[in-house]
Amino acid sequence: MTEEQSKNERHKKAMEKQKAKVDARIEQADTERGVAILLTGNGKGKSSSAFGMVMRALGYGHKVGVVQFIKGAQLSGEELYVKNQCPQVFLYQMGTGFTWNTQDRSGDIREAENTWREAEKLLNDESVDLVILDELTYMIAYKYLDEARILTAIKNRPREQSVVVTGRGGGSALQELVDTVSEVKDIKHAFKAGIKARQGVDY
Image (tube, rainbow, N blue to C red; front, side, top):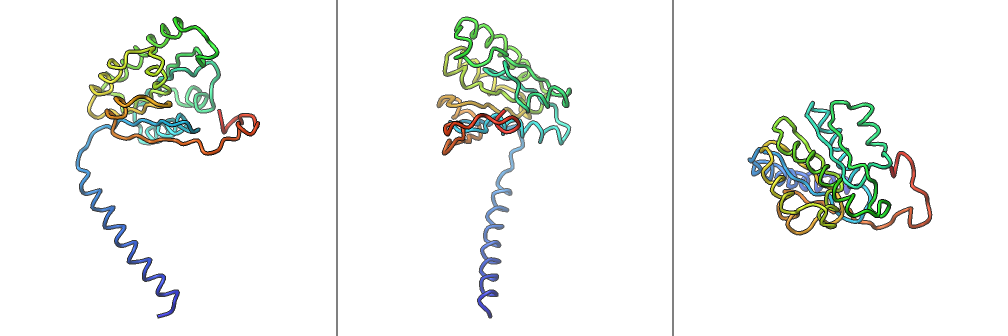
């Protein structure tokens, strides 16, 4: 047997073992229900990932609702696309922009409560397959919304409904409640090097 044949044989055996492990995990996953996902961390891409799941769900003809906290003063490319090309997607935005721009705590709390009411409607609607709660974690961190109310709504949503929460932090209670937590880590960012945010990439 040549060295190349030996490498190929070792590779084949390794992949056979890997396939057996994957197949076993798939076999063990026998629960069918919607999932709750938290996309957190200080890195770029949390909201973009959530909007990627919007596109994925639409590919299967699923009903999708998106509620955005914090953002909304300046539309991103994803938001523009959903507004203009995906009229079947329910999109509600708090619309006040970033809190460091508004500098109005009372006004932000009032708008947060109005926005949360729209989120609760989605979380109570069995016909909605996927709910995106973009930047919701900040509402918990700033105490603009009652954490217990948020956790209860997510926990008691329809069994087949999936929900995705984005934003830095979120707290230990939210992390404990959801099924999947993914952290986006900031290792290097162009903005820190003085490079302007790029249309179609950063927003």
